[in-house]
Amino acid sequence: MTPVMTPSEEAPTRLLYREVMTGSGSARYEANAPFKVELVRLPKSAPRGIRVSLELGMEDAGVWAHIVELDVAAEGENAADAFRAVLAAAREWLSYVRDEHPELAPELGDQERYVPLLDAPVFSWFKSFRFAE
Image 1 (cartoon, rainbow, N blue to C red):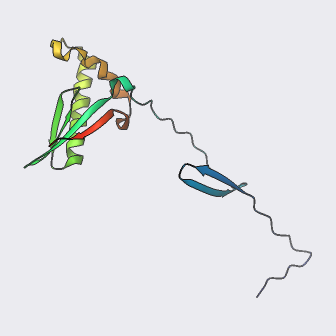
Image 2 (tube, helix red, strand yellow; image 1 turned 45 degrees about the horizontal axis):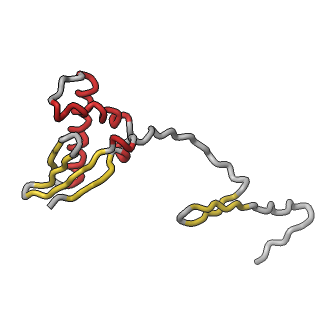
């Protein structure tokens, strides 16, 4: 059954749509729709010059992870556990270097340059990932 409109009823409002294009497609939204807008501030990414490399390898007992430039390593039951463990070890090491300013051996002398990683999101720490054989 088709609805019948009489002159005393309001005419239906016409919806206006806008289109948004992205690299992966497009979407339409109602132009007059009330959107809740929130501002999210993300911390700056790690500077390119101090990004580090991660190596992962398998052993009989699990997986190991090694951050080459920091010479920090850890193990876990799987890759995710090893990754979390090596991040915790790297944070602990960099916090120690930042807070204590220890006198380091010559081969570790440039470790202080990596301290800004503590202020960067983890996803921006790494320049490369490598699976060791």
